[in-house]
Length: 246
Ligand code: NDP
Image (cartoon, rainbow, N blue to C red; front, side, top):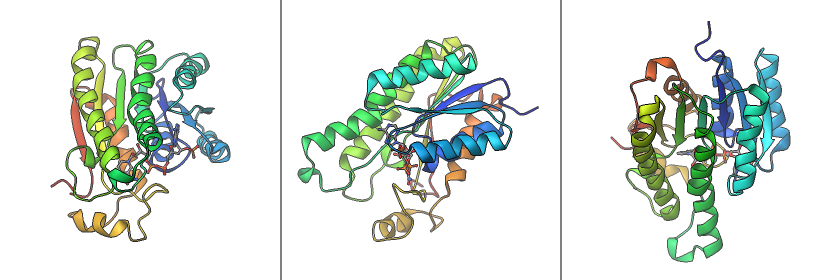
């Protein structure tokens, strides 16, 4: 039997990149999966179709992580559709690379609202439905631990916040048998962080493996943390970063 059969997962920002890979992997492991997106309705529909063609169950919900009501509604729709919620993957995230002193207040708010506030809101809403064995999984970043390059100051600060949110929350919900963990990717080839181009050069140099990672590298790790064999892992910050933080 698939390790996540009878489980339901919600992956925020699941229409492209790391989130789409996580959604497909959790579905392949047997979970019913809901994904959220903002603008990429077609891409989200393709993820759903791909999961359904493989015999799985999935829905896509438009919900901007910065819109608290939309995020709460997405959680409720997931539960209404599949009857339960076992795994929340807080993947929706963004970066606006530039020198800190040049960032506008609107840009700072946007990064904080998606990466931190959206994560808080989704997690609160999800916890209302989670039972023993529940899994809250953040997609943080290796730059939430250590910073090697300029231009990502607010982004790194939000990922540092996600790290401490993980550790703190693990202490509150552990007695309910719910784990809270933070997966910290290094450079992963996506639209947000393409492996080709000037921006990639310093990131590659900082990896021990001298290459970018693939979205499936992150998805496999998330699937493990979502599964029954990870039941004694909580409050942990787990890098999948090619040795960037080694
Ligand atoms: P992408 O930009 O490639 O994909 C982002 C996904 O999130 C899309 O499905 C997008 O949907 C959705 N999304 C974007 N903004 C929002 C929003 N406000 N609300 C809901 N959904 C949204 O990003 P990645 O896959 O690269 O990144 C995913 C996560 O991984 C982020 O948290 C990022 O910080 C983290 N990460 C990524 C790394 C990398 O190297 N790629 C490294 C470390 C961490 P739509 O098209 O509809 O907007």
